[in-house]
Amino acid sequence: MTTQIRISAKNLGELAMPEFCPRCFWIKLHAGKLPFQIFPGIFSSIDSYTKRVVYCYFDDHECFPSWLSELGELVSYKAPPHYSKFTTIDKVSGATLWGTPDGIFTKKDGSHVIVDYKTAKYTGNQDKLMPMYEVQLNAYALIGEVSGMFKPVSALALIYMEPVTHDDAVADGANHRHDGFAMGFSASVHKVELKTDMISALLKKANDIYKLDGPPNGGLGCKDCESLGTLVNLIAKAR
Image 1 (cartoon, rainbow, N blue to C red):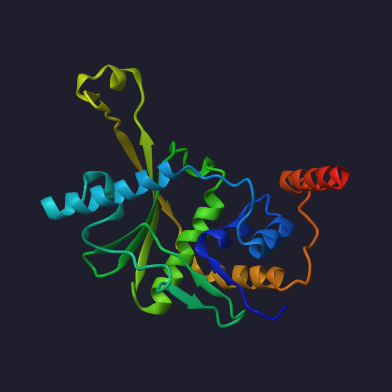
Image 2 (cartoon, helix red, strand yellow; image 1 turned 90 degrees about the horizontal axis):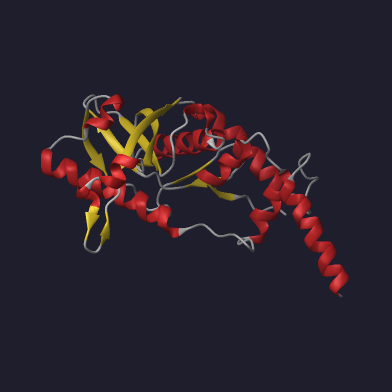
């Protein structure tokens, strides 16, 4: 196989995970859409709502919500480009990297801050997906700078939006509505180190795996590989 890989920033981040499995990665790249994969659409809806709330707040007040103050003096926002336009081709591997960040803010000094919103409980560096998120954000930064769309990038951050569900919130009459109920969200900013130099090596690794004629060996103790083996055996017995 000679075709170079075209990969999203999020999928590239899988290579940084401690339990990364080359076999599962190869299968995912070539299968396109895997069976039995369900991602609740509600999370995408909440992330979209969060972005629109931030934009609306700035438009109304000409400043950003106080919970974004850790990111420095922000003066404006830019609408993230469509993923088809936010791409770059790696000079070493020839791999195409693409994606769409959730938010892009401009600081007073003209530099840019790229953020991603996560609807989840904030646990700091204990988030098991943190390695993937770090690659994802740095991939966005690389695309932004190489393409010239958002140059320079001075900071990266994850914005965790944690549902407020404690007893006081439940009992608060302001949250009780005739058509349902209201739920608040508590924001936490987690800054991510800017280190775009790591992206090229990951793209080469991803491209090398992609170009293999068949799936490589699986990762040690990979549960997905074990499940796939069980499924293959069941199919064989059914025949």
